[in-house]
Amino acid sequence: MIHAKKISLVTGGAGFIGSHVADHLITMGHKVVVLDDLSGGFQSNVNKKALFEKGSVTDEKLLDVLFKKYQFNYIFHLAAYAAEGLSHFIRKFNYTNNLLGSIHLINRAVQYNIEHFVFTSSIAVYGPNQTPMREDLEPEPEDPYGIAKYAVELDLKNAQRMFGLNYTIFRPHNVYGERQNHGDPYRNVLGIFINNIMLKKPMTIFGDGMQTRAFSYIDDVAPYIAQSITIPKAKNEVFNIGADKPYTIKELAQCIAKAMKVQPEIEYLPARKEVVNAYSDHSKVKKVFNIKRHTPLEEGIAKMAKWSKKVGPMEGKKFSNIELYKNMPPSWQKLT
Image 1 (spheres, rainbow, N blue to C red):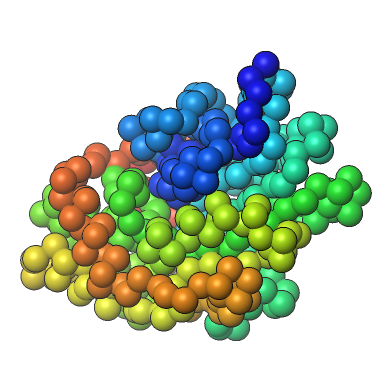
Image 2: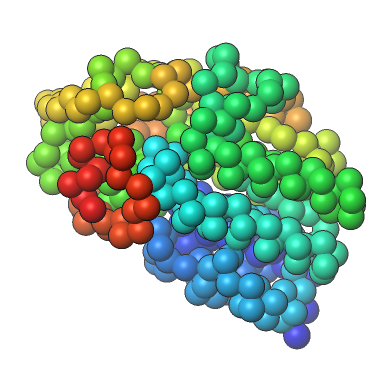
């Protein structure tokens, strides 16, 4: 058995947000164990001071081994297949990974008396709600990804009432920055735009590009997720976290083209079914975490563009577990 003063499990810790959270926990003095199946992340993202375990949160036998071996104090659950639009067509896969995998962790958190369970949900739980989206609004998720995330939120609240499991839930949105998998063709619009530019392809926009999103730089999100276990007022609370100012997708494309030093070339595709306007209110998290500054979009994109150019274009992985093709965007059908 490994003994440590503070030991944290970070699921999805080889991925984008998870690897940054792991870095901050290590800076805070934690011993960090990263669990990741590398389906969307890269082992090169894992901090050299972390212990890496390859595997999935859906593997209950592996979870039993890890919980017995490490005796975790904290769980930071960031592992997910976070493709909102695609989730309509991979319903079983979505619920298996994003819901059942989470329940496996919650069960063991209760069984092993975990001190605090930190969960990254999503503003996808709000659905087509009023904007800016606030934590006191009734969630109305309209895609299976958002449904799964909200179900986990409800289960954590139930586990707190029933078993005393303390939690903090974050609802981040459109997070971008260094280490993002810009080769994924289904999710992360900034990464898709940057990768297309490096491949000398046009940036592809569904619909007219007037959809609005607030894009959140990674350093405005990951540190607070890590710090949440040290802040009493964050215990058993839900927080929106990310940038305040919304931009249209067309404005985003212009900003990325400028950072990549190219003339914007845009290809418009048929509109897909999605929430048109999605951005949230962050007054609650700003107050509790004493947040004073957010990274301006141009500044954050410049940093991501610089990193992406060093890494170079990535080849996207085709998703091989499509369950439904009805109403799937034609551009996605070509990938399957």
